[in-house]
Length: 525
Image (cartoon, rainbow, N blue to C red; front, top):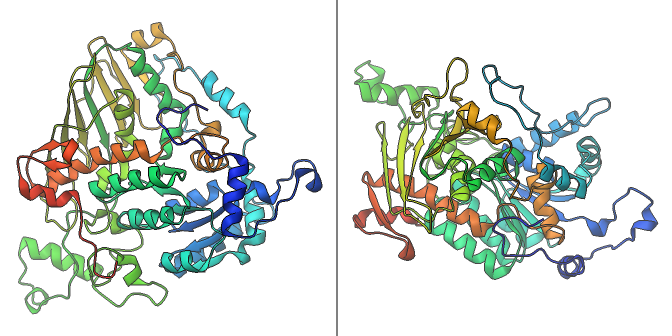
């Protein structure tokens, strides 16, 4: 499949077997020995997963047709609970089913025709048989007791030599350190979005992937979805004319933000002498005060490269995303999914200016809501573009072409404003031209982009490792996307509009802002 921006071709089957054999003893069994329909061990990739709760669990399900040989997680209780849940889901009479289903069509959109699955997607699906999720889960469960478990990824790399590829699905601040360590060992990597915590890490990841020539995929799985690629096909067709404005929004955060760190309550707070600010502090500290971490949690390994902070149940296992030390807030969580498509469709270079405004920001947790304006220069025949990001309940105005129950979906979406029309990509819905008369008269766009077989992002990575496909979202593209996203957070943290010199990775109008393009790792990391 000719995907859009991957310059690293997949290794050949012979190269794959040779490279795997160089690191471990590989048993190569011809297919005919096993019988029809069975997969030879030499056709399988040995995968390790770092960070098994949350998206790591979903990514693991996506590669269960392969050999999962190692798990690494700083919280053994969460890891064991996840393995137990898979055993329950794969028990007799339990169907694993697909990881996600189609959403029912919402009311109010009857005026817009639906074009169904693309011919390009049907052709892509025909290239490979769909995975049998239930059979893969049962196979995984049968061999789960042999999977080695670690708390420290460094020990895993040191002790286990049969790993071919690594999925990194930890909190954001550890994505780059783990992926870089894996690539240094020649291991292919699949890194959850956001792939990096800061701009310099994103650039370093892309550079290392090119140097090591491993198959390095970003885990923004919506990049492989048929309808999202159809949205790009609409824009590149020129049907809405010159696009000069794009609005992108999400309902995130769905985790705590805009709060102080938990502490021990003071005597004044206990006596009821509480200001508005200390009321929030007292509430946070009462709900989730600092405490010794559970015995199953390696808190120092969770902190990793970040500064030392006392444990609180407010931080782990989910709410870390709202804290600046470890996450990237709503923009980091959803920007890789939503900003992705305007960057792709309009071939946007890095922005020249970025300005983020927000609700109050305390430098510890991200604000409750932000709005970011990105200004992109003209390129070739394309005019300059302003992209505006909204989160925390902020949304763009509803287009005048909508009415009744047809509206912007609050959970998230993309609205392109062109000189001849608009394109609305509501989250979970097919892309629709506005007005509906333009949509219906135009029909489905020409399918310029190739599609990913079965829209399976993880298996696209596996097939690229085997030399059967090219990556959907390689680091060479994803690092560029993440730099754009992360510049919004640089403006937020610097509390100013920034003018950006992309060639030199430098903010030119505020020297103080440059510190937020990189980070200082904790001593020992």
